[in-house]
Length: 173
Image (cartoon, rainbow, N blue to C red):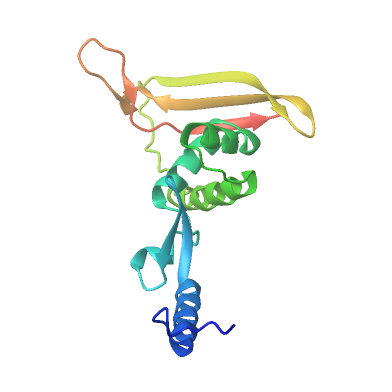
């Protein structure tokens, strides 16, 4: 018994070309990871270029960086999965956070120019310490401090002043 493709209205050539076109269409698509899950986008679409070298939506990158600064990389991917039901690896969160961290570092690394102090001006010094847990060395003491002039404070009426410039220094033992 011979099955005729012409009965179904599709010739063998039409079936062949349809399959070729479907395959080439799949090749010209990219999957971007978004807060709604993976989304397939044609390579010709502007969104297929990605942002900062990642095929991850800008919003999901923002959430990854935010969760990375709140907790360890190992835990933040669990948080993302819990809240938005998207699975990302801890290493992917680490890579995205490092790219953004380097960009922020470029803007912060500018040297702060301090004006000389007047003889009668008050200089404030603040210091604090805490313990952080490191993987390699266990609990470790960390100190942080800042020094600022009274003239660098903004006063709003009777309320305490807010420091305009806040040079902070840190020390780890």
